[in-house]
Amino acid sequence: MIPLRPLDVGDVLGGTFAAFGRHWKPLVGVAAVVHAAALLLVGGAAALAFWGNVDTFDALERADRNGTAVASHVTSLAVSFGLVAVLGAVCLLFATATTQAASAVALQEAVLGRPTTFRAVWRRAVRRVPAVAGALLLPALAAAVLTVLLMIGYVGLMMAVVEDVGGDAANWLAAVGLLGGLLLVPVVVWLWVRFAFAPAVAVFESAGAMQALRRSARLVRGSWWRIFGISLLVYAMAWMASWLIQIPFSLLGMFSLVPSMAVAPDTGEEMSLVQMVLAVGGYVLIVLVGSFVSQIVVIFFPQLATGLLYVDQRIRREHLAPALAEAAYGPPPPPRH
Image (tube, rainbow, N blue to C red; front, side, top):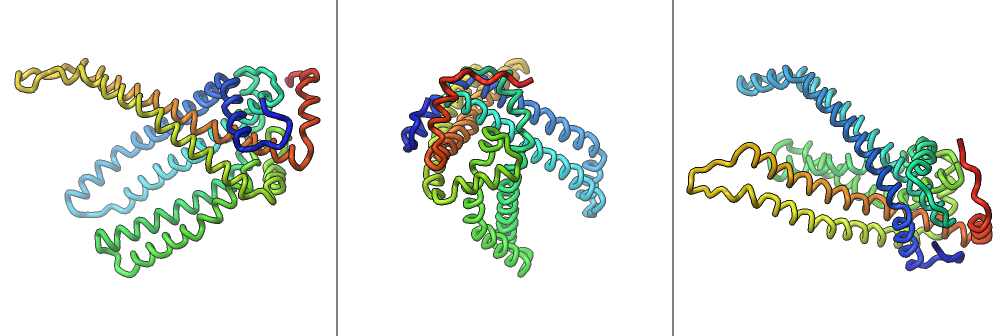
């Protein structure tokens, strides 16, 4: 799939397309399963939180009409939906870890020229999810701190400038949040590149989370700017492709609403419930399909490209090419049970 020599940008891009073209079925299957499971779990938790706080919502509505505040009810809602948010973050972490592990598994087989199946990718990926999730935790925490700071700064800015409330406290919130966030951006980007190879190391080398982080830092050292530039290019291409993919689905979804507009407003006719459900349901379904297809590009192309950069660094520094050739042309390893 790739030349057994140091890779240039064209080799990385071509190898990414080739790897996805060979193994897109198991990759899409893994993504569909883990994200559907995460969506059902978080959606169920949110429904339970809403159902369990129906009386609280009613009490808050009555308090709002009477002009009285009920702090205990606000606290109850904050705790309930805060737990849902935490569950969502955990599910997102493990869904991301699973797709990262699946990408590395598929890439390893693609580099060696071996076919693979959904079952094989799933079994190997699931075994490496804890290590990959641990390796993703540090960059994720840094990104979360950055997001919180920027949100605090935004809220403070809106309070001070738009609403003109809060006084000096709002100004301090805006200053600390925005300045702290801007200062933290380079640190987050540096960590993102420094530990970019950790998921691939966790799968290719069966390493633990901390070992994968240290190994990634060693491989990136001295090539930070090259890896950053290629990664940024791949992410930009993936987001552009995702946007272009969504356009025809959005147009098709708009056309699906045309039958519901056939009822002339001056005739006094009303759209039936069946027509409304079919029109809106068709539009939502088409848009969701387009969003899923576009997200597949955003999820897997950068991960496969990062995995190829990991292979490239090992070819450059550790002379991995002879070992790859031997593994590719030798007998495949026995399956793990």
